[in-house]
Amino acid sequence: ALQFKFRMSAHGSREPPHLPALPLIGSLLSLQSELQPHVLFKELQVKYGQTYSLMMGSHSVIVVNHHVHAKEVLLKKGKTFAGRPRTVTTDILTKDGKDIAFGDYSATWKFHRKIVHAALCMFGEGSASIEKTICAEAQSLCSVLSEAADVGLALDLSPELTRAVTNVICSLCFNSSYCRGDSEFENMLQYSQGIVDTVAKDSLVDIFPWLQIFPNADLRLLKHCVSIRDKLLQKKFDEHKVNYSDHVQRDLIDALLRAKRSAENNNTSEISAESVGLSDDHILMTVGDIFGAGVETTTTVLKWAITYLIHHPEVQRRIQDELDRTVGDSRSPKLTDRGSLPYLEATIRELLRIRPVAPLLIPHVALCDTSLGDFTVRKGTRVIINLWALHHDEKEWKNPERFDPGRFLNSEGTGLTIPSPSYLPFGAGLRVCLGHDLPSLEGKFGVVLQPAKYKVNATIRPDWARHKCQAE
Ligand code: HEM
Image (cartoon, rainbow, N blue to C red; front, side, top):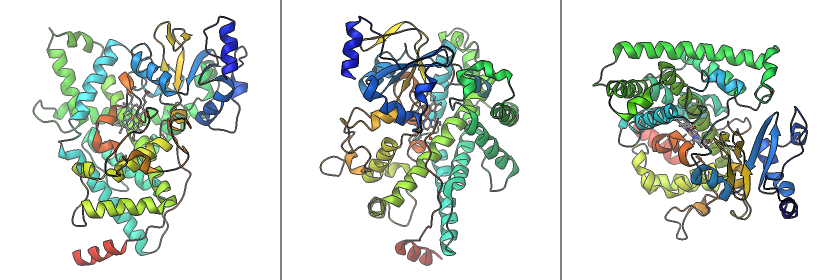
């Protein structure tokens, strides 16, 4: 790679090394591989260096595999690289970018993100409501496991976890919680899956938009799911508008309605100028975002957690010991216990390192001509941060493929640390994950890297069984 770079500089070019590209199809042939994209992008460093470029159809893309350049994109030049690409599928999903995650950087976007951030904070620490919902869902998951254990049944936890997390997000957004089998809820689970299966997967229509003119089963499914979702969101939104009161804030929709109204009534403030253009559709698409970004991410982390704990029973035991010592068996763990559970916290950090749920973040776009390290970057270039490469960098992490929560503990094993700057599970800067400030969601709860399907045989721990008998 070094040789390659020297050759580039000898020619006086400051463009990053690039993969071969052909007219129309770009670098598609060099990207044909059995490997998943994040793994392939990491491997391609050997030939092209840590930062290189390629062509996706007619779009120039830079891939960043090292934390120094990643932080230059996200933090040092955060505003310059705060754009998002528009693609066919995300445009369908977000009514042409009226959401936060796929919306391009603009004054309206800034204002939008600010009010959503403020609204979400109200449901984080200090407010009991979201925690109560999470505890209730956790309890009902325990009951499902316990019933299965009683009859020795192996369970696929995936639908159970999706259901639990969806219920928490429903309560956050709509103040509604659903029972198993509820038709509105089952409908929601079904269209969400259709969206997850078809959106932002680097499908060919996103690389070659003109392919839309041909019949395409994925696009048809996506449009169908989005139309069902939009009807449901509109119904919830209309109900909220009818019952709205400035004095009661039941959920995220109320909080957003209130923020929008107060900005509109405050004609003199700078903020109200920014709010111009923040339509009802923006509020609806925000709720869509929270579902999209919140459910799949969180469910995936939980699935990876269970997968790794099955492979590492010693970690499972240590977490149980820590919980038994700190929380005991007479109550459920609470958010405020988190500070006293360093090993659990270290395990969550290690899970987010070893299997980052958004291994390529969401692509960023350069909003003007700029540079990255020594390389020139042209306006409109898409930038992919390969979080997978950062989290598996052999120079930063000893045995990166080894699952070892202990690496996030200090030398005494009593406190937490982040041992490398090459760790960004939630991104950073202007586009940092919006759910990250919400500790109650962050810890529990994955563009998403999924574990393979498996079933779980739950066994009730002797201590727990004794406690259950006493309670009865
Ligand atoms: C463990 C769970 C989660 C992880 C690991 C995670 C990670 C991420 C990452 C890596 C990004 C992309 C940052 C970038 O493009 O630079 C992101 C964006 C985002 N996340 Fe999360 N996320 C999680 C849960 C959530 C939850 C629960 C919510 C909502 C309540 C949420 C809302 C968002 C939103 C709205 C964005 C787009 C931000 C923007 O473009 O400005 N995320 N998340």
